[in-house]
Figure 1 (cartoon, rainbow, N blue to C red):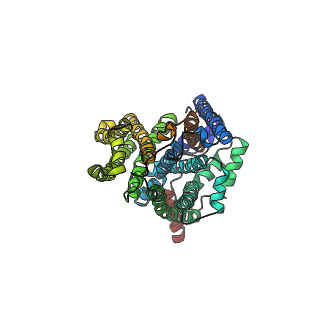
Figure 2 (cartoon, rainbow, N blue to C red; figure 1 turned 90 degrees about the horizontal axis):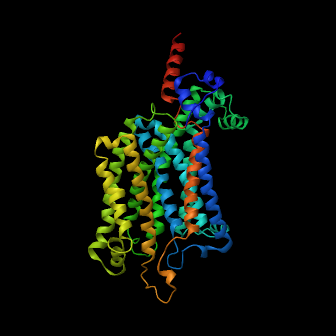
Figure 3 (cartoon, rainbow, N blue to C red; figure 1 turned 60 degrees about the vertical axis):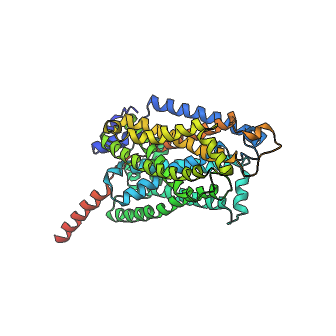
Length: 452
């Protein structure tokens, strides 16, 4: 994003750091406008598909009585997976005091909030009629894993939003005080959201305490959301799902996908917002190493997931494994395992490939593999029920998403990117204020005053 600052903005920034991290809010490049326009085109395309689905019903999709979950649920599981990146950075790395991850914390929180919003919306799309969601709440049945998922997704969304918002209070106060040339609606937005923040040491201490509580709270909730999502599959009697391995399998896969999307976001933000001083090659090196570690863990659970059924090859489980290994889904399955898992692990072991551009390309392979992996988790299992499929139309035997499904799917990713783009454009994407240094300096000055 090119930055052409007005004289007023150039004068009000009191440090190079403020100028670097806030200037994107005050300027809008042509590249940014084109990007928004392209995303809006995809959104409109999806809305047309969704209108047809509302008008004619789910018959416009390829879902039928047997393949009752399609590409929508694949998207749901994928969005839930990448939302785990918020807890990875805001909780695990932050509580372990990994200072190198600090510039990436807000990016991860923005991705987490955006992903979980899209996950919730895509579930409503999958229901066919949106009013059915209110029936789920009205006729709540705690025996149903679907209700568990609704509760935990709502909880995770609230905590993720609070993690993002509370940690941003000092920077919101800074935007309120510094950005005097922005439009009136932005000034009002910053004034409301800043909540009378005035850089008081007492406020900083309270902020630290709240952030620590939220960072601890989000971790079990994050693990719960992915475990409960896996239970939606594990409690349904289908080949490939009837496994106690699904919980850790989903969690490990979510960590891997989350690390990959952070690297992708780092690359775009570094290149298009000129933040190479803050998102350095060292960050890409460390994130690539972390991605290798998480991919190895996920590879272990993949072996556990398929080795047992492949060794026994009993009944419908055997048919399901055969379909994946050498059947219709074999090309996709092996591309996912090799191109989206094994190959990235090998490539990222070499230091030259842990630089920004190679790491970005490899992470894109991981993300593509992660999405197709969710497709393979959902679709093949449904096409091999324990009761044989007999006396039905040919369309019931296969699942090929219709253009309406693809349109809504592409639109969901466009919405995801739009939410991220909006948040990155309105707010500082890297924390401007350094709370530890501020508290330390104020504590020292306070002790000096006491001595005097």
